[in-house]
Length: 82
Image (tube, rainbow, N blue to C red; front, top):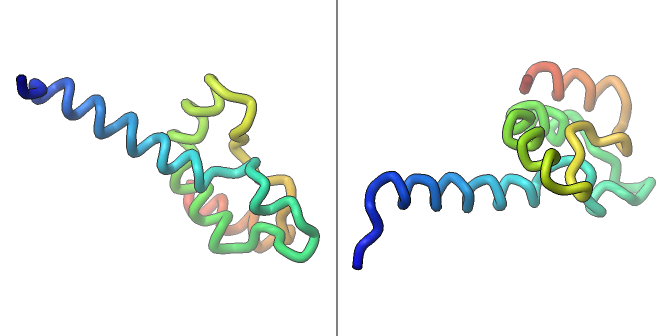
């Protein structure tokens, strides 16, 4: 059979959350000293902070704030995105 509209919407929201979690702070992408999170990463992390927070409640692999960042540039982006 077909999925009802609420079930389809829930499935899409969950899929979207999983995709966003891959772009969230706290992953191995920013672990290198040569590749720290910059302004644009901070802006993105600020924009997705609500979804990231919800995902972080269920996993230790995702953080809300990327600690491996360039400093004030990342912080500014994070605040503007928030």
